Length: 155
Image (tube, rainbow, N blue to C red; front, top):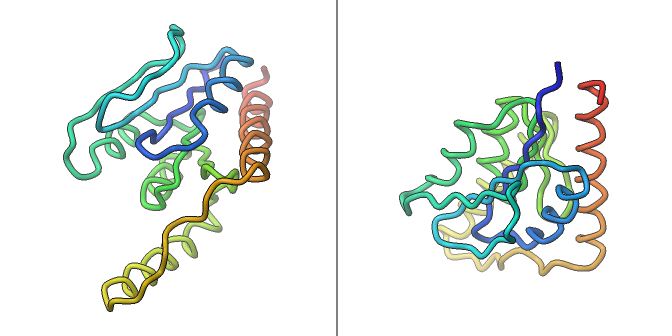
């Protein structure tokens, strides 16, 4: 028995939603676009917009409550990546760098260090802007993840 692969997008600040829609459409996958406010999504029965309340981590909580080992989470949010990995999901950052059980510890530690530096008044800057290479790496990582999950299911 095969279980459908779904893709969950942590959508509030996700720069690769269009890429996810295109790849998911090619494979016929369900996409959940989860955000704290309305986001325009294509009219497609496989793309479902989910608007959660604006409480802290509401989108993350919604995703983690539903995600399974057969699913993919697209996020730049390191704590959400950690929680999703603990549920067995495949997690890809918006620049195409996958989060893995072996890399998440370092990502969490780096996040904590940067938060501490900001709390001490250091200017740390924000994330780098997306480049065409990042988009290409993301598309490749998403395609690889889908095919790996499909092979695991014998599809």
